Every structure is written in C-alpha cells, then in structure tokens.
Image 1: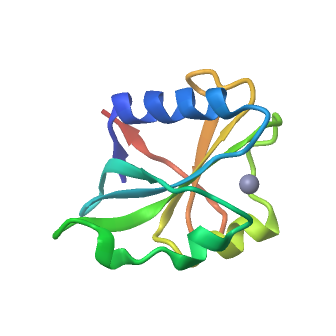
Image 2: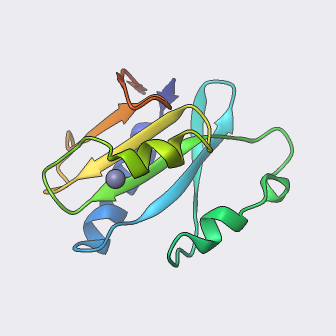
Length: 118
Ligand SMILES: [Zn+2]
C-alpha cells in the first residue's frame, strides 16, 4: 500500500487539531494507492455504521481507516481491530504528540505493516 506525503501530513494536522479528542476517517483510493480520506461526522459510532460505500465516486474504494490516539500508544485496541475488519485492509493510527513519524499502519488483524510514503 502507498500513501501520498501530503495526505499523511494533512491527517496528522487533523489529529493534532482534534486533540484531546480522537478523530476517525475512511481512507479511499484506487488499487493500492490511498488518495483521499472521508472525514465523517462521528457520534458514538452511529455514522460510521451508517456509511454507504455507494456514496463513493466510481472507481474509488474504501481501502481502510485512519484514527488518532490522544496518547503515546500507537497500537490498536480490541475495539479498533473489530472496526478494522469492517473497512478495508489498511489502518493508520496517528498518536500524540503528532510528529511526522507519530503514526503506524496495521492490517485488518491488527498486525503492523509497511506503507510506502511517496
Ligand atoms: Zn484506537
């Protein structure tokens, strides 16, 4: 999987701006390239569950998720892993203090994976 540098930088900015709250977004793109994110209004999990993939432009797919942790813990919780399993195959967690390298990527089982930033 690959992600553009501008995109990961923008996501880190959003995570920082939401501190001390978490934010969630869906990652979308084509094939194995993450091109955009969908920042969903999030209230207690409701809108996440209500999201319809039909709202995506043709050719774009949900490739994964991104969310932030307002702590220094970059690893997914059991609840995170359950969410991962519903939405694509690449899952990014951005963590405090939201530096350029304050993020990790995981597969749907919660195992750390490499992502190419380009
Ligand atoms: Zn989490």
